[in-house]
Length: 406
Image 1 (cartoon, rainbow, N blue to C red):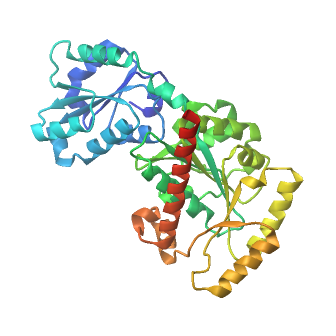
Image 2 (image 1 turned 90 degrees about the horizontal axis):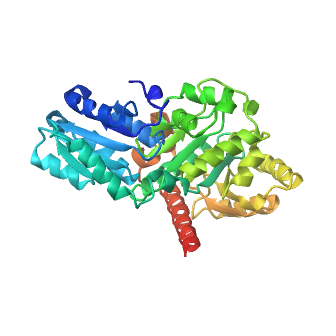
Image 3 (image 1 turned 30 degrees about the vertical axis):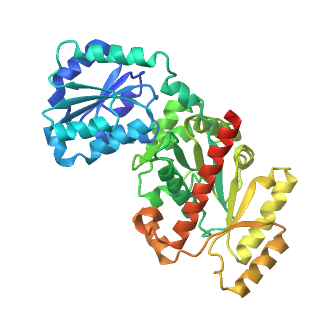
């Protein structure tokens, strides 16, 4: 059953199994309980849907495990962990599974369990118990609606200053650091022409992105979810389209609507911006919490940033939101370099808040391999600094939200 067809109707349950044919009797039971409002998917497909937010949030996930799954239990294990992190209800169906594997999966947090073949009325009784348990609690959809995502755009003052690398690695560090919490991270590539997020993570550019941009009237939560890709079931990614498109293919209203949808579904939205300024650039800056602007200690960055600042002042835009980041900054012992930084900052009239070290060849190699630095060069100094920034952003957001609740 095609995933896009599944998304055409409101799903109430998903049966997730490596081999659906091993659980044919379960399919009959589910058809009797849910009619056409259920779907069967593999662990890989379900993890993809879960990671990019393609599920509504209140479906019951029926995890079907058989003896052959014990040989490679990692996909099942990873999916159950991700689903529990997202607060989904999980029913475990076990067929000829050893007590050790069954005990392990139950400890991951399954809400109920039944052996296969199913005893009479077992599934109906399970769902009745689950409905009674959840009747007094808010649904996952309601909890998701309460999200108020923090928008963090990343802008490069000149080509090659490392803005895309910073955006990708910041998003990955934030996503991995919040895995144990009910927090979701999205990475969005707004460079519709030559965006490199897909390349840096080695993920495909989806045709659904092209359709979304060429038919802006179709923008909604479900169409946006179909256009997004899940990276390792941890990070939701909206890549640039597979074809080169003009940056003005969409207007400011479209971007504002997209950002509102993303804010309702994710806690952090990192946006990789194009170098060119567009009609919707102001909308991104206005709706952002913090706006990162990367530059290097060279004349290109200085002149481009001067022109950019004149635009901000001329349009009366909130320039105080911008945090200036100097990439490939001079080292601790480079006194001459530090003097140059001081002059650079003073001449531009801005305060450089963050200094990123030169990560060397490992950064280029990481991008060529399509891996975040955390996976390919964990001890790289650039990776360590980005990890600190990610941790600070997460901690500040958690503290701010706690203060609002109090």
